[in-house]
Amino acid sequence: MNKIVGDNLKVLRKSKNMSQEEAADHLQISQSAYARMERGESTSWTIHFSKICKMFAITPEELIRKEVGDAVYESLINKRENKALSSYRKIIKQYELQIEDLKAIIRHLNKGTN
Image (tube, rainbow, N blue to C red):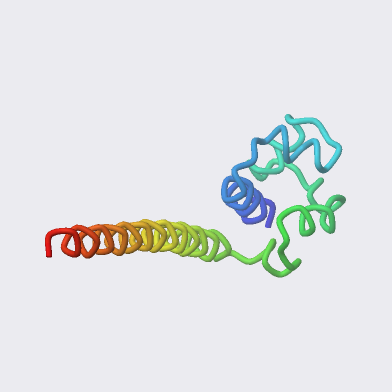
C-alpha cells in the first residue's frame, strides 16, 4: 500500500508542478520525510491523509487507488489540449478581425477610385 500511495503522491505532485519541498511545506514536514513517502518507505502518509487529499483536491479513494496515475496523466493531457485549443481560437479570432479591417480598407480605397 505504501508503494501505491507513494507512486500516486509523485504523480499528483508532478501534475500540480510542485517540488517535493513545496509539498512537504504544505504538509509541514521535511522534504526528506516527504521523499520517503513518495518512495513508499514510510507510513507517515496516514498521519497526513486529509491534508494530502486537500492539497491535491482528491478523494481518499483516489489517493489509495492503483490507477490514479493514468487518470491524472489523462487529465493533464486534456487540460493541455484545451489550453492549446483556446490559444488557437484566439489566434483565429485575431486573424478574422484583421481580415475584416483589411476588407474595410479595400472598400474605402475602392470608393476613392470611383
